[in-house]
Image 1 (tube, helix red, strand yellow):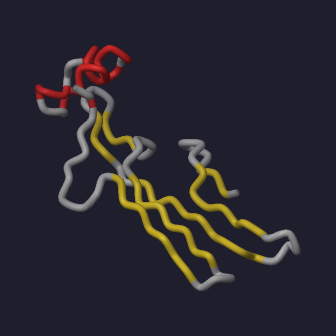
Image 2 (image 1 turned 135 degrees about the horizontal axis):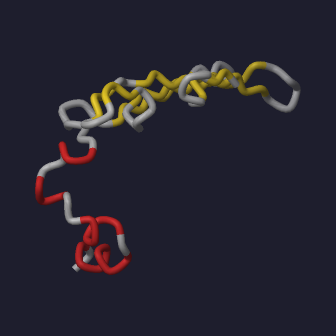
Length: 98
């Protein structure tokens, strides 16, 4: 595992099978975001993640957020999503699930 010493985020992992042969590689490519009141932050949950399974010749990529969808931080979120009770409590989830 390779960990970024500034953010303590794991950026790369080498995974081995039970015979200690290389099996999968995992990489995280962080996206910097400007956090209001803080400045640029690169460990904010916005990233591209890649898995390479070299034994089965397969790869998987995740992009968060998905292409064409904005990534909001704190007060950058639209007003309708700033209801803390609705989006962070069990009773709020109950309101959403109706």
